[in-house]
Image 1 (cartoon, helix red, strand yellow):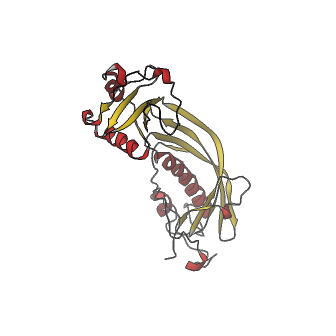
Image 2: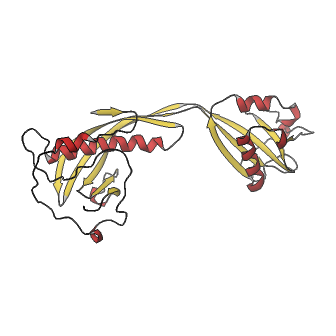
Length: 270
């Protein structure tokens, strides 16, 4: 079992493990027309793909079955880590294991592995800005504002008084389109900014920081939603792969053949 908190780079897996081996000639290279439309493609996970999965073992080197098993195990782990690295506020820590030995199928191998791990989500702030009507209520009706919390003589803070460039962009976008959202790392900066405004520039509701702004004549309400950090644990889940020398397919569907799975890697014959 392996475990990584960042992208795995296993460049020596096949270059060392298959060195000095001879090929068995089980398969002829496919033509480009026989390969998927997505070919060539790569997720750039940094896990080296065996160049010849039909290599026989010689001496103490890896057999083709061992090479494919180790490759898929490393690949799935890197796949999961990269999947959650796409989100700015999430990170993943995963382990993988081989569920069954690779099975030779047609021109490739059917391999089943499982992954398990945790995904950590950082503390964040969700800044949502709404264009409002003359009563201070969002025009799109997407949030419920109790009119009794709106000051009788609302004061709208001029956008010219806001030095924070990102907040300016959020407010201007809301004035143009009616709504804008921006998620940022947890900080007291925006809460303190609103707390320093006059009382009648904010809603009379202490549960969430809210303030009114005048964006070049367009009234806008800003609401700040804090989101607590969390950890999500994933129990062992099986994934099937179909690996040939030129195409790698993956599926997490239990009843789907991996040969019909999603193409995650594809390379043209040399």
